Structure formats: structure tokens, C-alpha cells
Amino acid sequence: MTSTNDTSYDAVMSRRTEIMKKAVGIDYEEFIVEGIAFDYEKMMKEVGYSIDEVRQIQSETCVGNTPLVELKNINRLIRKLAPKGKGARIFLKDEAANPSGSFKDRRAAVSVYRAKEFGYEGVIAATSGNYGAAVASQAAKRGLKCIIVQECYDSHWRGQPEILEKGRACEAYGAEVVQLTVGPELFYYTLLLLEQTGYFNASLYSPYAIAGIETLGYEIALQMKELTGKEPDAVIVTHAGGGLITGTARGLKKAGAIGTKIIGASVDLRGLHMASDEDFNKKYFTTGHTGFGIPFAVFPDRSDVPKNAARPLRYMDRYVLVTQGEVFYVTEMLAQLEGLQRGPAGNTSLTAAIALALEMDEDQTIVVNETEYTGAGKLPSAQLTFAKQMGMVVKRGDSIKEDVPGKVIAIPQHPSQIGVIEFPVEDMKKSYLKELIKREGVRQFSDAEMQFLQEDLHASREEIVKWMSEIKEVLK
Amino acid sequence: MSTNLAKKGDWVQVQMNILSPEERAQYLPEDTKKVPLQMRVKGFLVDEIASLGATVRIKTTTDRILSGILTDINPKYTHNFGEPIPELMKVGMELREFLAGDEK
Image (tube, rainbow over all chains, first blue to last red; front, top):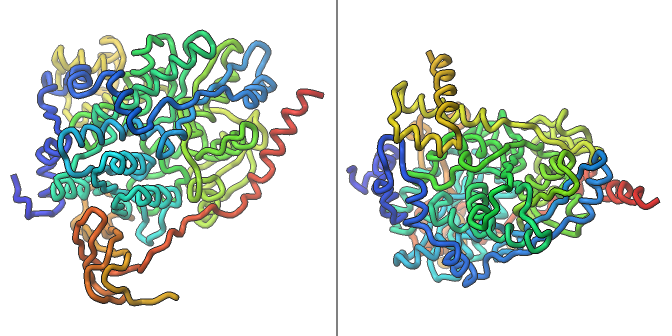
């Protein structure tokens, strides 16, 4: 092991396993079966908490038990647009009612509780999103110190308004906010901070964080049974790193809602590079977009823990994309028809829900599983003002046809223009295998590894064998 | 009254280079590779007195002592609600009209 005095990039990265083990308090080696295979359920069970324990932990800090409300005016609008017999009813889980204004409080609640229980002096989280405020809020409540590391600026010190706002929120809870320019080396600097402070890594991707989200799915199942007498036919989840979809799906299953379809939705920002200094401020959604959604689904273990507990392909039945313009339009719709002013990124799944409700039967139900707080920096007006300053064309138009990430934001002219772009889940499963083969080289996978892949991809052995042979042909 | 001088204990922001372009990770896009990885952090000034641009020490809210270039004194939040967006201004009215058509 290199000396801790050596803080160069290569030296710190070479110490990553030791640093992470100390900072998360989990020995991931225990769950390795062989090769790429690890026992996911054992990991979730042994280091996680039961649903009842998580509900207790969360209730101590006012997290969870958020309202679920039927969007009656939007549903009336959907019935007007839908063909006869179609038009499912949409219900919204108002996660903005959590202490720091998003579902991320559920994740943070368990992580920070665990940090306190383990006796850590403070917590660190690498996040440019709502999770920072959530960790800072929970740390304040539990009396721990807190550092949030954000990717915030381009090389001209132009900050993303949405990220600047999240930084302000963290500071309001007393956290130290470390703001970096663009680059994946945020991970390097976070490791260095973990090593130097000895704080707990409140990773978004630990089993604690995912266990924290399970209560969301659990509550949805119970609330829908109470409101409609049955489980929802579909739950639509804004998809980025994969934690929300994983935790929600697991919670639904634990409440017995096994027939509910799990649909992921992301804002389409394909073509913009996540690590590009120039592309950084051409994105007007800083989360819930394809830049996270696709890479984290096809290689979950790219995260800041050795084995990511967020594994979306295990649970995702369908994946759809929406445009930035549509989400801003629907954010306006939610405020003006339902009286709910909520942040745009959380409305990604609502946008998809409106499109999907039109193709579902009128006696079916859809739950949109989150909202987020809004305010300065996070409003459509703030993001679109910034977009115009950065030279984007903002216009009224048919978003699906006219929106071009990094160039054009088209706001629908009519609600009938709200639609989705299908992104076959099978394509992501094939990409997962392709990435795996590139990392591992072309080799035979053992029975245990094949079993793991079947679970991780929610696919049959025959499908995996077929996809692998297709990939090997391409890679030849 | 704005001033370019910070006194001990003032709330300030400092900036520092974390990785120079040559120290950065491999496989970065060209535009990112040619600029350094930089950081900004806020804290209380440790030094007696300093002017903007000077190298100073700060104590952060987690009691870390850091050294960097003084970039701001009592830094204010600059993000805001944005301007009214003409392309969004009529959306609410249009949707309400569309719904009202229902009841005619």
C-alpha cells in the first residue's frame, strides 16, 4: 500500500479498496461467490435493515409517510386525449414532503443512522444532487459533521444553477460544501477526504441507502390498496443511478405487489458527454437523465463502493426517455392544474406517466413515485434562463421531433405532443454483457457466474448465451 | 460596502488546484484534459488580514484547515429564479382552456 502522504491521483486510487472498506464499514469480500458473481441478497440482508427497522429509523427524523394523491385534473386531461377505453389514472407520491425536500432523505436517513451507530465523527457524500441536502439534514439531526462534494462548475467557473442551489441547501444544514470543476476525479478527491477525515462514506449505492428507499415502494403498495383497493398496475420511476428503481421495486415486492410493472424514465441527454467541460453546462437537468441512467444500468459497479446495491436491470420492465422541453411543460402543468409547484427533475417520471396513461386501460392505475422541492436555481424559469444564456434555442414545438440535447429545447404546443422514446431494456442488458466481456476478456463464465448474470439481468440462461455469442461476433 | 480586505474570522471562499492537466485521470475528453481540476470551498479566515488573490488559510465548518487563493469575502448566493420564460408563459392558460372545453 502506498503511503498516505502520497496524495497523487494514482497513489490514492491504488488505496481505494482499503479506504472504502474503512469508510463504509462493509467487507464486500464476504459476499463474493467467485469471479464476477456475488451474493446480492445476502449482502442486502446482512448489512441492511428490515423494513420495520428502516421505518422506525426514518420516523425518528420525520422521513417517509409522505402523501399519495390522485392527480385528478391531469387525469381529466388524459381522458380527454385518450382513445375510448384508455387513459389510466395517475397518482403521485409527494416526496417533496420529506425534511430536505426529496426522496433522498430516505436514503440518507439509514446511512447517517449507521454512521452514528458505528461511531464515525462525520459523513461524506459525493453528490451534485438532492442527496447532499438529505445527508446534511440527517447529519444535523444526528449530530454528525458533514462534507458534501459536488461537481459544480465548468472551467470558466460557470456554476449549474440547480447544483448551486443544492450547495446552498447543504450549507443551510451546516455542511461543508466542496465544489469542484468538471471531471470524474471527483471520486479521487472524495477518497482523499475520506482518508484524511476518517468520516463515513454515505454512498448513494450502499445497502443502507437502498434499504432506505424500500419504504417508498412499501408505502406506495399500502396506500394504493387503501385508495383503490388494489396494487398499482405500474410504477414509473425517474432513473439515474438506479437506486430509486431498485429500492422502490424491492419495497413493492416486500408489500406483496408482485404484479406491478416497474418502468424507468430518464431525460434524453444522449450525445452530451458526462465528463466534458464544454458539455457540462449544456444540460438543463442535472439528474434523472441518460448520462447517468444508461451507464449505471449497464455497469452498476462503476460507483463509489465495490459492489453497488443499486442494480436496476434486476427490476426494470421497461425504459422510456422524455425530452427536456416536455418535462418543463409538465412541471408547469403540475403547478397550474394541480397546485403543486415541484422541481423539474422529479417530474421526469410524471411526464412519462402522462404518455403511458394514454396507452393503458381506463381502469388501470399508475404511480409516479416522487416529487422534489423547487426554488431558486431549480425552477423551469431558472434553468431556461441559463439555457438561453448558454446559447440554447428555446421554442414551442413538438419536443419528441424537435428537441436536440445541447442545442434545442422544444416546449410542447399541446398536451397531445407529450410522448416517450422507447429504449429497449434488452439493449441495456446486451450492453451490460458487452462491457463485461470488454473488462473480463473473452472467457467461459462458471455456473455460479452464469447464475449471477441471470439474476443481475433478470434474464434466462438461454437469452444470456445468445446475447453473448452475438457480442463475441461483433468483438471479433 | 464592498472591500477587498478580509479580516480574521470573516466568512470567505478560497480556490485551489487539485490536479494539474498532466496529473489528471486518463481517458478524459480533450476539452476536460487541457484544464486543471479545481476546487472552491468556504470557511472562516485564519490569517489576520488578507486581500483578494492572496494565498490564505481558512477553517471550514468541519474544522479542516485549508490553504488557497482568496476569491471572495462573505460570498453571496448568485443563483436566482430566472427571468419569465415567454415560451412557458401561456402553458397554464392553454391547459385550463383545453380542460374547460370538456364542460361545454
